[in-house]
Image (cartoon, rainbow, N blue to C red):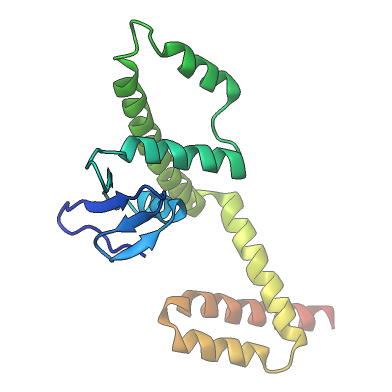
Length: 185
């Protein structure tokens, strides 16, 4: 597909009369799906009419949105679309693009903050820690019924330093299981 733009370079996409899109950076024909992926990867591009040189980027991005709305789960509510259409020709039309752009930027910033807060709270959340320990107990109990599984898990943990803590917890669980068996027996 397309290579990422270097140092802010914009990839030029040419649109031909036969509706084909040509990526000048990769020298290949692409689809709207490719362009949608480029947007998701934050690759800047500009779509130009191959004959006239007119900038068609806005039209193509709108077309991508229409196809996404038609083929997948709809993201734009009907009431929003009605309100948006009603703004065309309105005296506030000139203010709307800036407002929508700022709103989307704030939404993205809040999304990042929320994701970070959730990730941080899992570490401090006693219920999340309990759920994680329950999973570890379950894995330890499962390993007890499969001969050699504890040793195999210990070998995996030794091979992957990031899993040292997990291996230590599994060993502790196995030790606790032995003690429980002694008390019960």
